[in-house]
Amino acid sequence: MNNKVLIIEDERELSELLKRFLIKKQYEVTCVENLNQAMHALHMYLFDTIILDNNLPDGKGIDIIPTIHASQNKPTIIAMSALHIRDEVLNAGASYYIEKPISTAAIYQLMLR
Image (cartoon, rainbow, N blue to C red):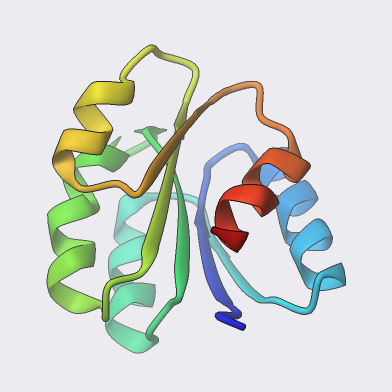
């Protein structure tokens, strides 16, 4: 099982909800709130799955997708946004796109693919 997950999400309640859910499913989870923290985490660890919000305090999540591909070993990238940007994030290299509001079950199903 691929089990190291990075959640890049500035909404703490959502981030904590996802984290608690995934820990119960035996995943090791790291949470960050902005692109700067994400860059640091990406340089420190290899992740199997990255759950990526698009609207972050210091930029757009979509802009970090090429960096993720360059610094990681082909992680699954699940991009999420309240905006309708499915084609844009998939063309940028995300594995999957899910619109907010999200469900933990939907995220988990994408991770199992």
